[in-house]
Image (cartoon, rainbow, N blue to C red; front, side, top):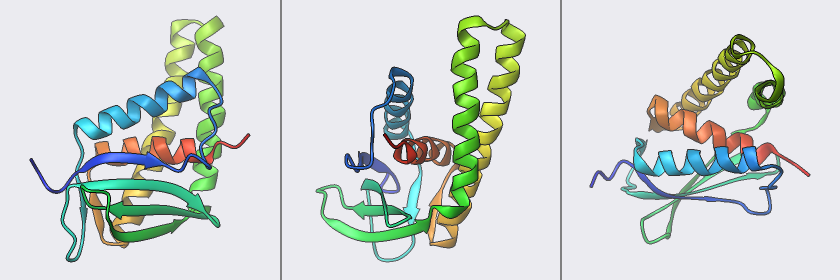
Length: 157
């Protein structure tokens, strides 16, 4: 087994609000896909595989990285500020997408979905770049799945 991977993800349940079946489905798929295949490699003397605790604390996105026995190794934080606009736009487009599924033509749904995927890619790229600045290397698929989870953490009641 590769040591440069996440083997478990724990979302801060105080931050997570279960709003809809669609959101729950996206969260579950993101975690399942992430655990099936990912690349996660922090710099330094820490070795994996890793258990990742994700939360938002004091306007900071917290990556609390633990070893496979869930013992703490390191913590990295990112400001949520750079993500706010992308997450807000992503939520707006997702709402439009879920509504379109009910009533729109396939071509209209496809157009909205392209916008949704574009925003998702933009958020994933930002996350990958910001983590790289903090000494954590991730691949594109890992960035996309983690961005989905970052979006879930932004949902408030």
